[in-house]
Structures are given as structure tokens and as C-alpha cells.
Length: 88
Image (cartoon, rainbow, N blue to C red; front, side, top):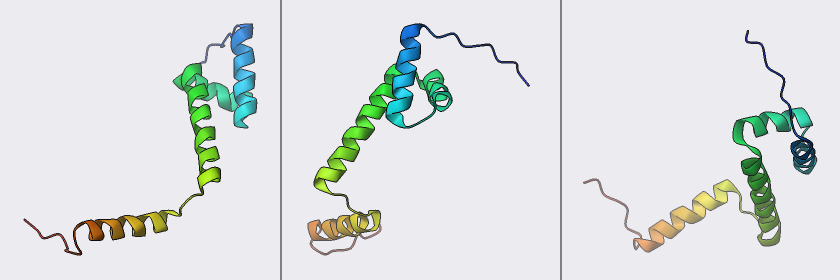
């Protein structure tokens, strides 16, 4: 098993990590794992985008996967005049 070197964070990085952990609802240890893998900028961007998507779903409503598949099939059939696709 590899030994792990200690990670030293600047006070600014520590503050950023704590805020990201708090805002994401994760522990500092869980958040640090993602930050080490993906970086602060990506993790912060991903959290913002995830929250925006959640807010959009709340505002517009969400469609169940099964219903979305049915609607897509209906749209395809309608667009092709009810014809089924034939093998080439």
C-alpha cells in the first residue's frame, strides 16, 4: 500500500474547501477527494450548474424518463408521417 503524503492547504484554499463542502452538503474529507481529482474551479462550477438545473426543474417541472421516451417516440412518428423506418 502506498503511503500518502500530507496535503497542505493555504488559508484561502482551506476556506474555499470548507465553503464548497458546506454548500454541497458533503464532509470536508469527501469534498477534498473531489477537489484533488478535479480542482476547485471545476467543483465550484459543477455545484453552480447542478443548483441551476435543480432550480430550473423546480420552476418548469420535470418529466419522468419513461414519459420523455414516450413523447420522443411520438414526435419521431409524427415527424415521419407515421411511417416506420425501413432497413436499408
